[in-house]
Image (cartoon, rainbow, N blue to C red; front, side, top):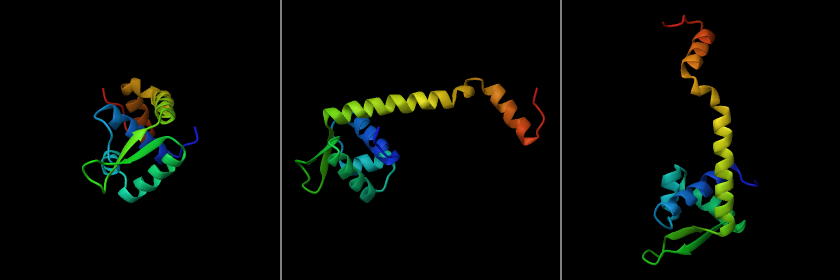
Amino acid sequence: MGLTHVQFVLLASTWWLATHGGQPTQRELADHAGTDVMMTSQVVRALQAKGLITREPDEHDPRALRLGLTRQGENLAQLALAAVEAADADYFRVVEDAPRLIGALRAMAGRPQKE
């Protein structure tokens, strides 16, 4: 989809924050995503250059930038989220049978089964 992992995380986080309360600042995005503020700024600039994110000055704090998604960014965020959720579901499908998974892990660790 043309995104690095960090770009995906920040694009998806921007989408989530925007749908749950408006335009986040870069600081709010970094806090939400658990990323470094300077790195977040660099990645957001790259996403802006790709036409996925907008950055506008905050009307109350001239040092802050408010982030938004372009239509292309919103579409890509939703598409990427669906793809990641599908991959996660496929990868972790075995966990739906937790007792069987725990038994397999115990066997691999050489521990006896619990009854």
